[in-house]
Length: 192
Image (cartoon, rainbow, N blue to C red):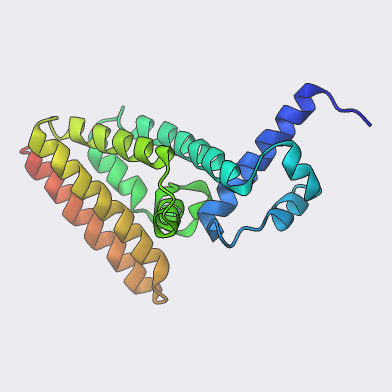
């Protein structure tokens, strides 16, 4: 049975979307191609009609996830008190509890770094997020440095909150980091 080019493009997009969610939730190494394809009602062999390798899928899924998250981030930075809104969103219980819908950096970037497989999509995402944060802080050289520290704190706090067993402690990690970062943002903007 022959399928239209549109069907192939839709299937490709379904694979990318499912992979992006699974890579963020379970990690790259823990996401097998066979279970991924089976979850979509597709065969393992059919994967290679869309991608050369799992590494290619990882990069495409990472790019897709960063673009998806980028739209949410851009929305926060178009609101009143953009940096505080972004911090609240990033260090929320919902973001902690649903990694499959959130920022790919805490799971995918950590794993790619551990494997020695840097990604241009990670570079792009970090530069974009840090750039928006630096703008909100006044875009000075100091603001640019501070934005990298703040972004690193956001990612680290989210990773730790997802990693501890005690849910009260997980919430405390998020709350402590969130309040400290918001205090930094207000101090940088001279807001009481």
